[in-house]
Length: 171
Image (cartoon, rainbow, N blue to C red; front, top):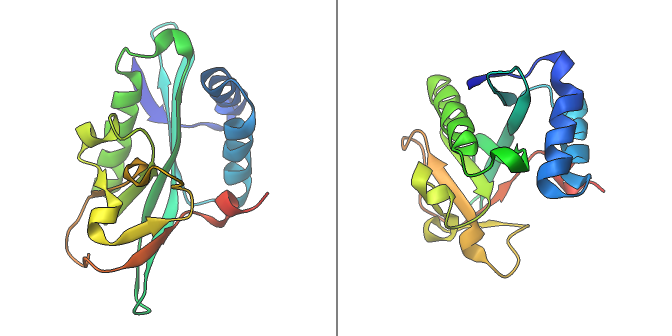
């Protein structure tokens, strides 16, 4: 398997992966809108030996707005999808690791994710509430909103609200 950056010719296959993985078009629609409205992104795909695109991960700019008026910038991971027949074969893990490494290489500070609290801690994600952070999408399970620090410098443990790219908030 190979992990590489998304290419223009990958968009239909990426859409198919998200629709198959989630069983609905919502995440695929989100990826299409982010592709159109967010030029700054890290979009990686997993390609198996027969050149089939089997997984996709997207990182887009995010920020934390602190209650004292300060802010820091980082990235949001969303969405991550793997074709159902390739799930539980470390495809998603390799996509997450490759994306985190790319952002680390770019000297970014943090990555936020709203995801399974049992899955993301293996990549050193921690519940963000422990750092005083909230997110509009957590609902009942505050442990699902997590943060991974790529660079501790500049991060302060104080109350704040994490924001994904504006596309996440539009209908």
